[in-house]
Image 1 (cartoon, protein in one colour):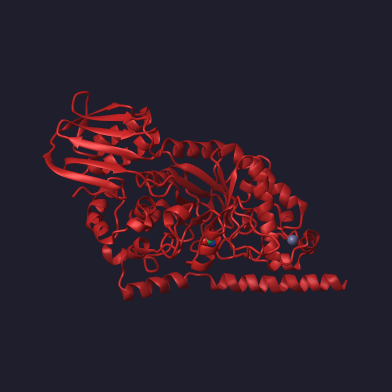
Image 2 (cartoon, rainbow, N blue to C red):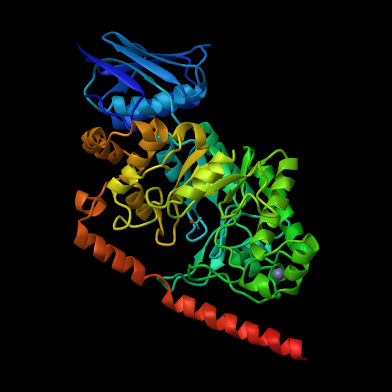
Amino acid sequence: MIKIVPQVKSIKENDLQINFDEISLQGDLSEFAKKDLQSFITDKTEYYCSDKGYIIEFKILSDDHCKEWYSIDAQVNGMTVCACTEEGIFRAVTTLKQILSQPLCGFTLEDEPKNSFRGFMLDVGRYFYSVADVKTIIDYAALYKFNYFHWHLTEDQGWRFESNKYPKLTEIGSHRSHTNFGIKKESGFYNKYELKEIVQYCHERFIKVIPEIDMPGHTMSALACYPELSCFNRKLKVSTHWGIKFDIMCAGKDFTYTFCKDILDELCEIFTDEYIHIGGDEALKKRWELCENCNRKLKELGLDNMEQLQLYFANYLADYLSAKGKQTIVWYNKFDENDKIVPNKEIILQFWGTKKDVEFANVVKSGRRVITSNSSGYYIDLPYGYITLDDSYNTQGVTGIDDTKAIFGYETCLWTEYVKNVKKAKFNMFPRVFAISEIFWSGESNKDYQKFLQKLEFEKQFIRKFDVKVPRKGIYNPNGIRKFFSKLWFEKRQLVWQGLYLNIDNFMLKRKIKNQKKI
Ligand code: ACM
Ligand code: ZN
């Protein structure tokens, strides 16, 4: 059996024995794809490239297939690879890398994705990943046919996007004095040149980039630079520890809206693809409830509560982006279609956290576009004790929803609270990314775990070529005892002290406000 992950749509193998040493790449292959495949063949297979070896002929057809479709026909004297676009050819090249890494027989295959949005998210806010490390992660995403790179660029713990208008964001906001686990400073940001370099790197691999500036929550790194963005002009620090913070951007001040629009202007200059993510998760309303500006804004808008004010905030920015020709993605927050205010219909809602069947189904039925990032399978930041390989593969979609028609996109998330470098990222990614890529590409309804497991050993060997050593089965599919200890270790490192600190700080702030009112 020829082993390919993600599983191709159809493949027929025959008994033809194919033997060769030299490979000649010919036809409609871009310079980039040619070099990519040539260097793979030379460096990572037993073959070498020449002008006269076994011919792999690439053809771009004008047929009516989707842009990622391709076919491969392998005969004794040569192979023909067809696609309708360069993108299709590139996806075929990723498949060829796996095919050329195993014994060859004759075959014909045809392939195309079930889902046209297959996202991979990397959080560089918690820990900074160098340009080289980001490229490494993108290489893995490309190898497993992801086609969107969601780049989570800002967090409480670090602002990584260079802004000319607000230089303090990186001068101050890109450093945290120490981390959860260490006494060392954690710093870094990408200048405009580097940001563009990553965009180009992705585009060469037919991956679109979705930059995220998380707003109004998870913004301690920005508030530390511009206190006027916060509700009480507070002097805050870039967060050292993770956890949900109480201080978020003030939604009642004009400055906040100006700041956000300015940042989005700069962002749109660099990121030329159609989607922009404006975050919106875990924005507690503790400060807004107390803030005069936020309360005044709420009243002016005639809204009922602070959750609605956040919807207004997101809609306002989505309108702004829409006028610039962009589409907005936000992290989903619960709402009711009958509420005074609901998310703009154009906004794409990204579901996260645990499975929310009923909400999800209702939102989808109302005709809204959703991306699913189910945290019980696709959150690869979590230890294997929480999300085993089995869990990632067997994560269920939403009951009663035809996955390929109703769901706009799928995305796996690599948050980095516990993932401090690319070595740990690789540990967390593999083998789960094998499973996730298969669900995203081949479709939930075509899952076949037994077949997947038959391919796993090969896949582990294959990814070794790319400097990844997949951990033992006992690690990625742990037994009950291991799970228990893995969870204990993880929970213990959750931040009890940080929670205590936030509550004391909150208590003091409330007292101060009360005293000021008395005066
Ligand atoms: C999230 O997991 N906070 C989106
Ligand atoms: Zn406020």
